Image 1 (tube, rainbow, N blue to C red):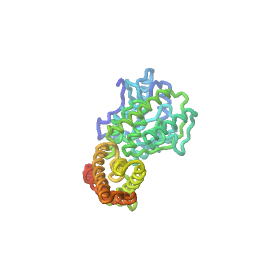
Image 2 (cartoon, rainbow, N blue to C red):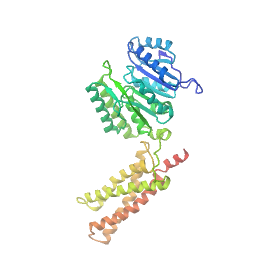
Image 3 (spheres, rainbow, N blue to C red):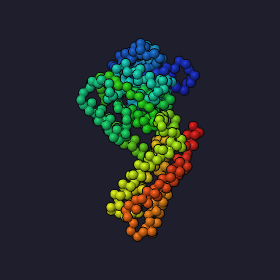
Image 4 (cartoon, one colour):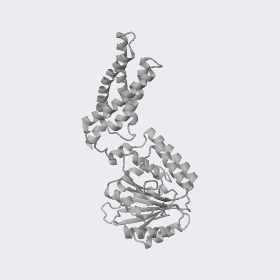
Length: 412
């Protein structure tokens, strides 16, 4: 780094002068807008923010005099620091500063200050209190007031619809330049974030959501900067590539989201009238089993019109077994994230083989006792066999497939 005035996070963990909030302003060739932005932000925080703060200018490879302006502001305004990185990338700049900062809460905002600063305290307050893990300003949330052109409005809404459709994202606005994260969460989450550019925000939020972290959304007043230098086409292509990369990572189970969930994730809230422990697991398992049995019977009846009873039973049981294992993994035994998902499905298929043996055996026995049994008799026999298979399935899932998870929870 050619210039850095940022205190090291690891320098002294017992320091009492560390700020509560570190607001990062990532910049690239902003020699004109940087000074008025930082002065306005510094004046606002000094007057309205009730905690110790720092403003960190993150200059990512500017080629103009941005670094000189940052140096001047650092020397003149108390609580202002600066970092100069030799490579471009907003995500790279944020990741570096956030992982080095000694503040309890880390935030960032765009240099144009398009977001009304009155939303800053509502943004970070849930993080300071520990209520939430991340917070985002949302231009699409109810109550937000936005001034921008139709083109950018369309692009923003389309992008968020794509995220919902491909990555099942539930947050409303991925790219608003107004976000915050608790430092303990950032320490564990950011090493998983690979993107160094504009997709950094989206990737961080998607991973946080998959890990069970709580994301607080704040409706904001936002005015579009007509002088924005973002290359929309290049950014869109990079974002689509990032979505594909995440889908592949989730499919391969490469990300240790399960570990992050165990460290930071929030456990499901207890439901009134539904006990925890073995009784609660039995209730949830029974509900999933009832739905699976209904789906199995419907599939069997549909397939039976075209194939024999053994093939219809095999296909229907295989499809519902995969869905049943996934549902019980998440709902009954509380295993979230992709860690071990393929192993659990493989073990579930072995459990499925036991169920297949019971149901197929019952059909073979029926055929031995009657040369041409009625379809209704077949269904009754299969229902009884499935009840037995379900009991065996629960015991095997609890004792064998998800045993490691329960032991891990006990140790924790």
